[in-house]
Image (cartoon, rainbow over all chains, first blue to last red; front, side, top):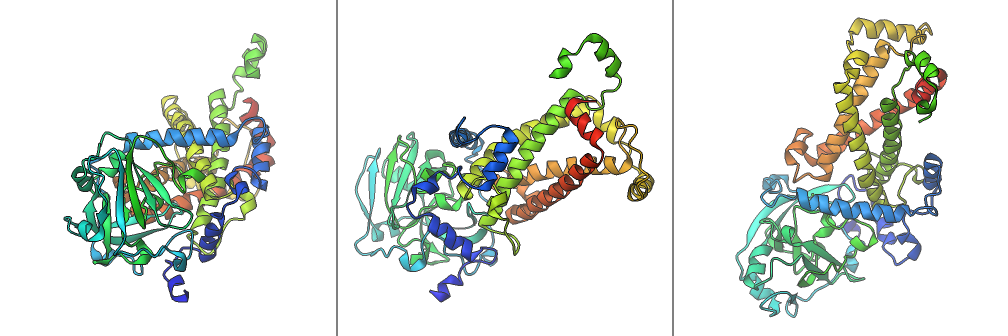
Length: 261
Length: 209
């Protein structure tokens, strides 16, 4: 554990990381993130109205966040590639980051694991790791940007998601690819189709030329260099092509759903 | 609004004395409101991954936690940007920037700084800014443009990667964004203190005269 804690990168406040992790504990009061705190009092003074009662600031902010989803989808250029870097720029050690400690990270058995495919696809066959390893892979060195603000450069190798979607006959006119993961508390995250079809969006099997270690999401991670880190699910168990917005672990707690970079 | 209801006589007699036109006042206070929201939510966002060895006390931040702060920040940014754009356009179109802020000469700034520090600076004519004001107001407009541009680079480091590159990439933009915030906070402290020391300047920004 002590050794793994050192993997946190400089500039990331460890106590704050832990505090963030604690925040993910089920707690109804935390979801009401707008209420409480002296800062709200200051806002009340500024606006001259009671923010929490007479109009719902939380509802207004949610609406603006949805508006921002639309703006970001409009800004998204499928031909704009995330900047790539030389291997010498890779952040070492690359930080482990989750809402739990590394010793609580999922331990997936690669021999029995199968990627489940559901929804609007022609071929719903499940895929073993060996089968997935047969698909053509590409390597890319890109910057991972966390919603917390820090960033780190990593090397990810795997199969472009759009090639896999084509292979399984996915309906690429559908709105989302929804990923479900093995993380405790059930991590999941929706990915809008245009981001899923981006050339750099990858089903990742290797980090730095080595089989993806447990810390970074073994057996499979979805690397989306055009999205913030939390939109890059690890320990992926299944994917579903769907027109329904099914929400996500962090998205449901108020983080902007598109969160493109 | 009250200016609309005054009689013609009053209007005529006060027209010449209008120090801050209505559009300047409206945009000024909207900007002040948006800036306070941006700064307080920005401090909470900073706290999630501090650049330096300190964090901001939670009591002076907005949003409660990171997700809440981000919602505030990405909502208030529209107010700040739209308001700021209108201000820049009107500032150039009406000639206000040219008339009020130019020219700025080093000699003028030095002599007015000396006068200010020795308490000899005149505040008789509030329609004309002294050289220290000209320098600070022009400077803070540039800082305001920089903080928006660096913020856009942080928001969209891939889609707006050429903009981000101007700031030295994503990590560079974080520092530019932070120091612009620090400059604006420092400006606000001085600005508010001086407005309170010369109350008629504050009155002019509220009722125009």
